[in-house]
Length: 219
Length: 225
Image (tube, rainbow over all chains, first blue to last red; front, side, top):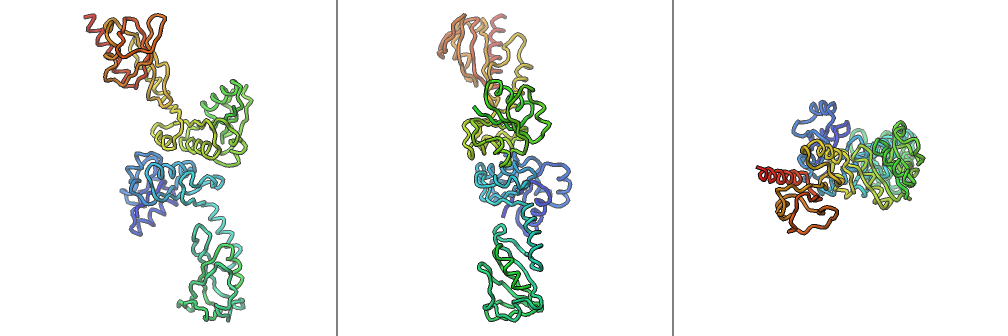
């Protein structure tokens, strides 16, 4: 996969390194000298393009015509919007992902600017913090479909309603499935006849609204 | 007309004041409160402070009933995004974006915006004034918004007397607009013979007008020698 990343801030460079580690091709565009100094320590020089990410000439030079995904991670929302529009209209980039810096601007990040996926960093963090506060010991391992579903982990304490009950008997919320049970370090396949025990770790995929209902069963 | 001006720099403030004086209803938007000090004290239009990308600020500036929106900040992407929102979301009739950084002109072209390339336009005017030949043609009468084409008035020297207009223009990036002889002007035919002292109005690119001036000077020189 060829990914073009606009901006070299913390999120962008983390993404760049992550992709390079996974043997993808990632190229990054940045124009702030102080940021470039750091980038050169973190990424191979040939992956860094110096200049404005809104400049069509530089975009072509950085390979926008052959990129599979554009990640717009610039610190100004107008730049990210304009870039996604430019990428699709002028260079037919198949997939655009944009970061939202100011949550008040989130409403603009849609198909009108050819933004396929918009990630609202502050609201994602705020939601995660809120969940950690309300769900007690349940840990969110992964967010799927922009937070619509979560992959969660919960250790069953003594006296929880689920202890001693078979999975088939559990009043699981709709839109929830148990993916695995970890018992004394070993994975148990969660068939309906598996009875849960104290200290089992349950891994489940659950829709956001049902997460607290699930948490009650295991606490 | 209700016009929303986005960006209260020197250009935005001047535009807002002019539209206001011309009797239009005007709102001006900027996120820096100090920016409004640039406004003419006689300006009584609406002043909206805030980030123009936010829906709330657009509501307060009443984009939904605007007849015209001018995005004239010194950030090209903000101008391009606001112009796009004005056209697509609010269906505003007249929308014009300012191109500030000439390297970013492509962005506005991609959006299909009507653009005033203020930097290029200004530089072009300076260039014309600085490089005009002594006693030669004065500054252009009109320059297109993107600064690429301008209309000039050119006097015909004795060396071209009796020669056809098409010979003067052949092969150059120049089109004739009108020919003035004495008190009368007309739309010139290509074969029309020129006369000493004619004033020809031309629209031309920068290279076109330079080549044309060279051609005029050449013949007057060879004629006088």
